[in-house]
Image 1: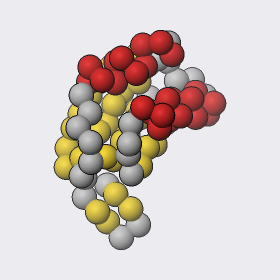
Image 2: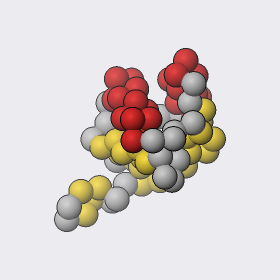
Image 3: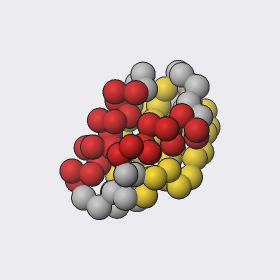
Image 4: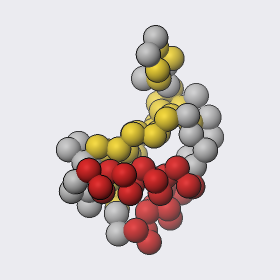
Length: 82
């Protein structure tokens, strides 16, 4: 399982979080997807391999921009993935 932390430019409110999350949910098969407009991040826990280029293609038509991309191993904890 992989954890992807993606910096997203353009999120300003809770509705932006929902929109960014919904776009990811439609394009990526994932265990968990979380968006934060306060941190300007999107966190994805997935078994699938996701590249920065994939994410840029997904978000290009929406007006949001991928600023950063970090991949690491996800660790299963008592109350979910970390």
